[in-house]
Image (spheres, rainbow, N blue to C red):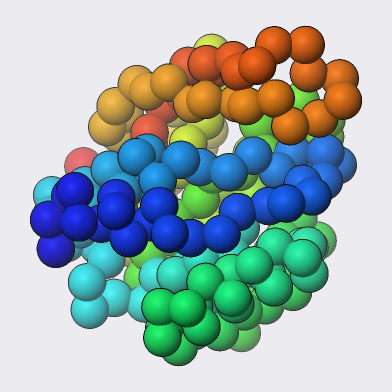
Length: 194
């Protein structure tokens, strides 16, 4: 599939109408999501023909703590006539052992940890433990050195694929600006160190 075609399809997906700040729910733009998936597929062959998990509801198997987010993802799947499984779970607390060896790739845009300090690293470690091949994730650029250090400790490869701007729109009452761009790294974690 061509990049523009993928982005066009993703533009038709529903997003949160009532996001929950405790989960730091901010939608990934179709532009950014398309580039993430396209890169994972065309450069690394980690999407097509693979079992893909999304920590935050999404691809072959969607995992989320929020039943409303799962309902939106199920609606999107129905609209696009896609069959997929969803698991309602607190990824930070669940072992997910029953999925070990069954998921090739995990794609995620975890909370940045501004409301729940360190949750991004808890979810990243869980994704790395679960994925058979690779994890693709977005993290604040300011945490890059820490994340690379942790990847080495965990015995996985970590590659910065791109530094991007993540648009955070005015979604919550405490937001003062119409939107804010956050510098994020698009990272690939691989089970075999490169």
